[in-house]
Image 1 (cartoon, helix red, strand yellow):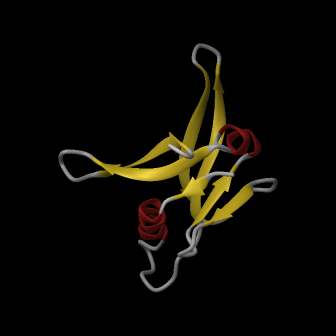
Image 2 (spheres, helix red, strand yellow):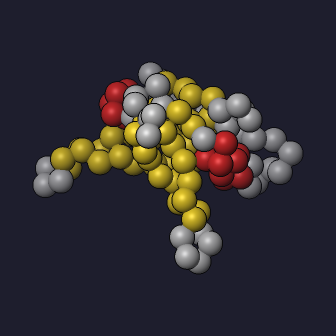
Image 3 (cartoon, helix red, strand yellow):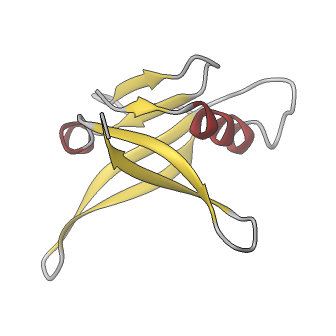
Length: 99
C-alpha cells in the first residue's frame, strides 16, 4: 500500500483546506491515464471525495489520498513525499518503499 510521509500529509492538508482553514476536506487523487504514444501516465488532482472503487489511504494527520484501481496497483510499493525546488516551491515525489 502507498505510504505517505508526514511532509506529504501536511502538503495535502494545506491543499485541501485552502478554502476553509478550519476543516480539511477532500484529498489528493491519483489515477492512470492512457496515452497511445506514451503508455500509461499518472494524473494527480485535488478532489473533494473519492470516486467509486477508489482505495483510500489516510495519513496520521487525517489527510486523504485516493487511488484509482490502476494507480493503486502501480503505487503499491511507493512512498509519497514532497521535494522543495531552488525557489522554495513544493512538488510531490514518489520513491520506492524501504530505500
